[in-house]
Length: 133
Image 1 (tube, one colour):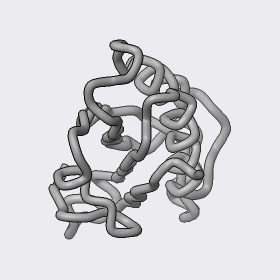
Image 2 (cartoon, one colour):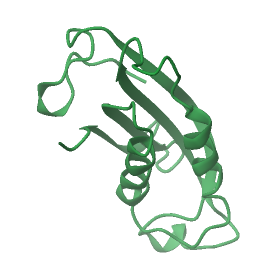
Image 3 (cartoon, one colour):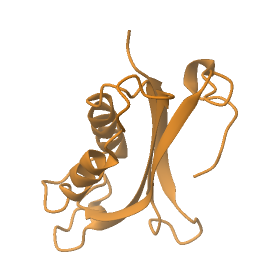
Image 4 (cartoon, one colour):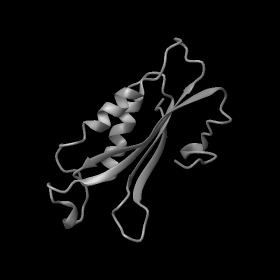
């Protein structure tokens, strides 16, 4: 996952005080997804690569931890689900899962279809969001 100085809204985790960044990197999952007719064959799901970053104040107020396994389990649950048209649907879903974890103040979710076009390494969507106030 590439680094950027600031996400949406100008939030920069590196200058926002002591924070922890919890990662799930390059999680592969096969999902029935896409708008194109050639993506709508249920016997041929599309490989997705999912990256999730969750940001929280450090140290955590309760001395606990951010349970990234809940996010990983949610991604694994996408296997075998009904067809989804847009990557944005899955990104927004994962953002809600991240914010189900009380310590998470912000998150970045990136989903890429790595083999969708022969001339590109991948095509995808990335959203950075701060917890709603």
